[in-house]
Image 1 (cartoon, rainbow, N blue to C red):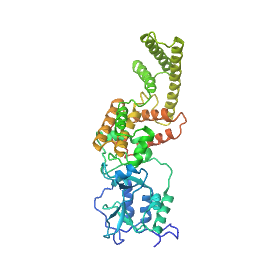
Image 2 (cartoon, rainbow, N blue to C red; image 1 turned 90 degrees about the vertical axis):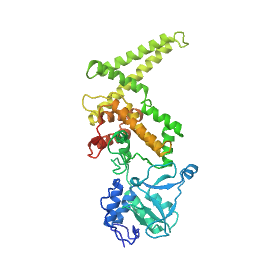
Image 3 (cartoon, helix red, strand yellow; image 1 turned 180 degrees about the vertical axis):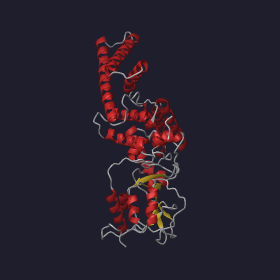
Image 4 (cartoon, rainbow, N blue to C red; image 1 turned 60 degrees about the horizontal axis):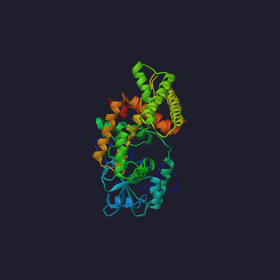
Length: 426
C-alpha cells in the first residue's frame, strides 16, 4: 500500500498497533504536549504518513545507562526491549518529550532525530516502539526499506530555527510560584521551542546538557554548578559596569521624579566615577602608582561609561520602536538577565545531573521571587533581560541575538496560552 504523496520506490512503514486497525479513541485523554496530540490524531485517522511527519519534527529520547554515557560521551547505546503487541519481538523504545519520566540519577536519556535514527539503526529485525503504553503508541518495522521512508520524512520536514511556545499540559506546573519561576526562563524556551514549564528537565539529553554547561559556562561539577546558580540568583553574573551605569540613571529618576536627559546622565556618571577615584586615592595614600597614571585610568573609566550609555540609549530607542518598551519607559537594571538564566540553569543542572529535582525546583522558585522583587511586570522583566543579553552578545548589530528575543517576547506577550498572559507577575 502506497502513502499519498510518497515516491513510488519508498515502501510505507507499518505503524500498526496490533492488527493494523486504529484503536478506539481513549476517553478523556489529555495529551501532554502538542507532539503527543498530533501523533494521537494522526494515529486515530490511520494517517501514518502524518504520524511520521510529526516524528520527523520531534526530539526522540532513548534511555541508556549513565555509566555508558559517562565513559563514552557521544556514543549511542540502543537498548532493545521485549514488548509490544507480539510477544518475543524486540523493540527499541523512543519517547517524545511529553512522555518522559522525571529525571533520576540512572538511567539517563539521549536525544536523536528521525533521520539519524534511520542511519544508525542497529538490526533489521528490531522494531521501533514510539511511546509504548500510551494512547499515541505505535510499533513499526525497521528494515532498510522502511528506514528509507523515515529518512524521506526527516528530509522533507527539516526546518530552519523557529521560535514557538510549547506547554506541558500534563505534569508541568501552570500556576503558582514554581510556574512563575519557570516563566522567567520562558524567553529562552520559546526561542528553542522547548517546553517552558517542564520542571523535570531532560532538554537535549544528558551528555549534551553537560556539554552545554562546559562549553558556555565552564561547569564540569556539581560544586561549580552550585556556585554559578547562586551567583545568578544574586544577580552577580552580569557586568558590574552595566549595573553601575543604570543605577545612576535610576537614582536620578527617583530623585527628580521623571525622565532623565542623556546629557545629565552622562555628566552625573562621570562625576560619580571621578569622585570615587578621588576617595580611593585618599584611602590608599602612599600607593606606588603615580597621579598621572591614576588620572588616566579614571578618565578611561569615564570614557567607557559614556560609550556604554550611548549603547544603552540606542538599544532602548530600538526597543521602543519595536514595542519592547513603552514610550517614556527605560530599563532600570539588567539583573533580569541573571534571573532568567538562573531559571534555566536550575533545569540545565538537573538535565546534567548536577542537582536533583527538589534542588532545581527550589532554585526556580527563588528565581521567580527575586524577579518579582526587582521588576513590576513581565514586560519590564523582558526588556531588562533582552538588554542584558544584547549588551553581552549583540554588539549593536541587531542580529539574531536581538531578533530571536524580540520574536520570543512578542509570542509571550500575545499568545493566549502564554504564561505571561496567565500568571500574574506580582
